[in-house]
Image: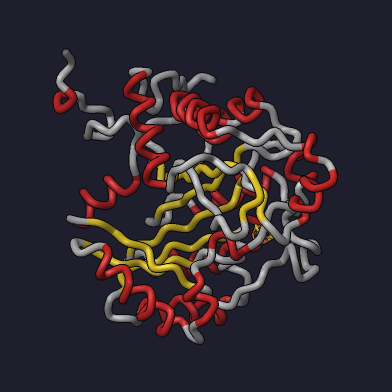
Length: 322
Ligand code: SF4
């Protein structure tokens, strides 16, 4: 029988995908834990500067912890988050502030400097994870983030969601894939991590069309990637569409998603680290799909077990020439 301990993949451990958390653990000598922050940014796809109504799938409550909506300022939010996280994760090497809600580069340089600096001035915070749209990230902001990266861990993450412009248009994304590719290229090579988010299962996609997108991703200078399955959540345009026309959606069952995300990783460039394999909107606002039992950690374990059963790993089918 194969000895599990002896398998070492290109990324240096025996996990079957190149895990960002394992990479950071190695680099910083322990767990790197995010503390979610709501910084009061808005979104250009809601306030009319790019679009109105927002992306049809978006309800920021689905990824914003309640405490960040209740606390007043960044320091209070960090303190509230840390109180809980320090109890839960006793062996954390480093905490980083996670600007997750809305568009966290949507402001003047002075505004973002003030916000990022407030987080970094907290004695327990040693870095930033910044989630944003590609179309509002300027070179001037990137220069500033590059300066910060000389002293802190920085991960700048762009919502790519899909590489199919027809699909992006149909979900009112307000930017195309070329915009994502451009921002990722402008941000890369500056001494910080550049990440992308993919959202699988949008209307107009097929399993095959989504799988083919891996080749668009592989040619980008990305360090890290997150995967999410489409969930229909309350108070979104999609919730209305789902109520009136459910046939326009082909939502993944849990089993289908596990196999799909493994298929995608088999084709993914092996040096891109994977930060997230799945997501979970709070049950109180989730309409569909309702996968039976399983929090994120359980589903992650199921994906890892399935990779083992299939005896496969990230990049097994990757080819530079594709
Ligand atoms: S997903 Fe992001 S870009 Fe789209 S509406 Fe929501 S906050 Fe704005």
